[in-house]
Image (cartoon, rainbow, N blue to C red; front, top):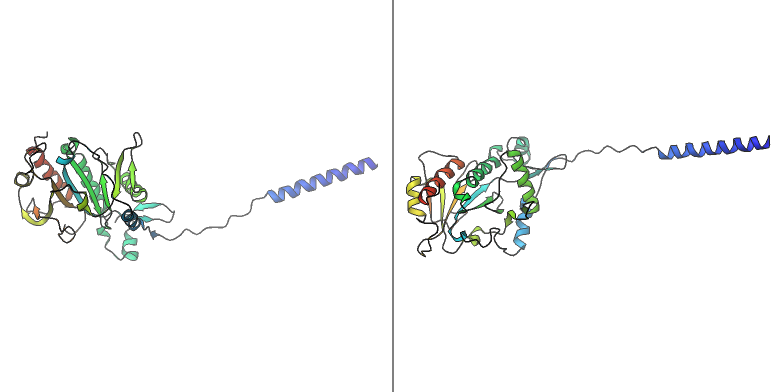
Length: 288
C-alpha cells in the first residue's frame, strides 16, 4: 500500500509540473502596433549634405579615349523625391499614388510630381545610336539639387515601377553598381555641375522661349563637324534640357549658359525634343 501511494504521489507531482510547464509555455498576446503616419523621407537633403562633405571624386566613366569628344546632356529639375509609406517602405513620390499627400501635407500641386518624365527622357537618351557609339554623357539634376552621373552602359528599366525602385535605391545608397563586374552605373556626385564639365565646354539651354532653330541648323551651328577631331578650335558641347512638368531652364540656375535655343514652334515633350536633337547630331556625325 505504501508503494502504491508513493507512485501515485510521484505521478501527481509529475503531472503537476508538466501542467505548470504548459502554462508557462503559453505565448503572451502580442500588442497591436499602430502603423506610423506617412512621412517625407529626408533622402534628397541627406544626400546633398553628405555629398557636400565629400571631396570631388573621379568620373564613373573613367579615362576613355572618347571622353573628351562626348556630347553632354543634363536633365534639369527632375522630380525625384522619396516618401516613406505606412508599411515603412520608401517609394518615389508621384502624382498618381500620392495625390492626397501632395495636396494636404506638401501643399503643392500634384501635377508637379512627374518622375515619369525623367524616365522617358532617359530612355530616349540611352537608347540612341549616339550613346551606343560611346559619344554621350548624361547627368541628372533633381529639384532638390541632387546631382547624378550615369554610365553610358547602364540599361534603364523599361517599366516605371522598376525605374522608381532603382531611383529610390540610388537616393538612399548614393550609388548603383553592376552585379556582375562591380561597375558603378549611377552615382550621386558633388555640386556644382560646372566643375564636372571639361575646360572650354560650351553650354546651351533648351526652352520653347529660346531662339528658334531647326534641329539640322542647330547641330550645324553648335556641334563640331567631327567628334574625333583634335582641333583645338572645336569645343565640347553641353545641352541642358528640362525634366519637369512645368517651367523652363533658366540662366539663374545655370549662369554658365551661353544662349537659349528652341527647335520647334510648338511645345514638345522632353523625349520628343531629345530625339530631334540627337537625330540631327547623329546625321552630322554619320552615326547610323
